[in-house]
Length: 123
Image (cartoon, rainbow, N blue to C red):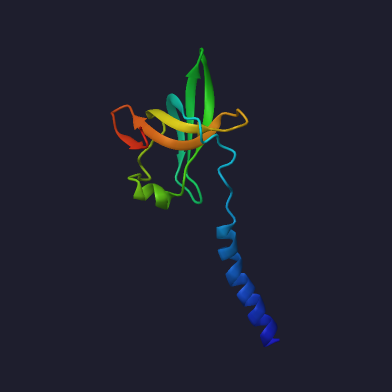
């Protein structure tokens, strides 16, 4: 019985570590294209495993909602981000790698706020 309990405990302890290594690739994003988006922040989710930005982009009198995936908050902090860097209503320009399937989404590259504050790769 003790042996079975130890095996169960070991399996439980190893399961979260294995899940941390099960991570998706960036194959869904076209890393050879960079697209600028100008719009208004709807939501900034500072969460693990990835932070997200939702932005409304005006296009021909309509509004398109885009979802932008970022890296982890830990990595973003190392790049100068804070939980409070973006707020709902902020006017921003984002550079993203778009989704390959043409959906309104992408992978974060850089951000510039209306006050000139910038983070990311603006090459």
